[in-house]
Length: 221
Image 1: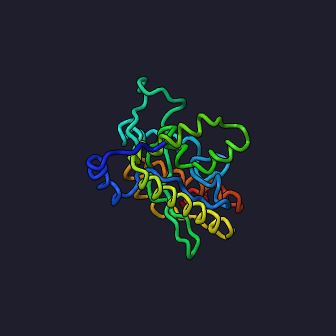
Image 2: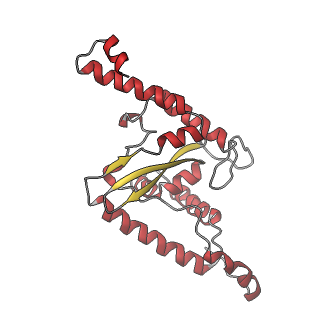
């Protein structure tokens, strides 16, 4: 329940209304579910490379959640799990392209907010408790500084818009992915050499499948 305030307190808090929300659930189209660097089944990068990316991203953010500030190992705020390395995407809804634009750390709670649609499905399946779902909604409000009823109304309207956007995006099956910014990101997070090494390995693997000898394949890359 969002509390009410006297007029003076309300005026002091209403200046938050023109600021963007810090933490908003994603509207990832169904055809792209599971197609990320972090999913081993997608085979977009090796598990060892992803572990290195994750380790460096966590180090870059000084072992803190980039959304709420939770610090890894903070026993004062009991949470299950650890810090996640979250892939940040932008969408070209006209050409139906999902573009990787950044990596950020997310604690378990913030990660569940970012993937609120998945959490809702797990709730319906009985795999997540009502208490856990309520805890995540409270966390969502806390991180976004939602303390006024009008702020709650604005956020709920945004969530409804995200559901509509998700349904529209999911109605198309011809989505593609753009990793053109990966070089910039790998340099930012100190994994440029590893990325390029893996790209060479994949190219050698492709040439071997085409019938080239290992010596010929290595010369070509």
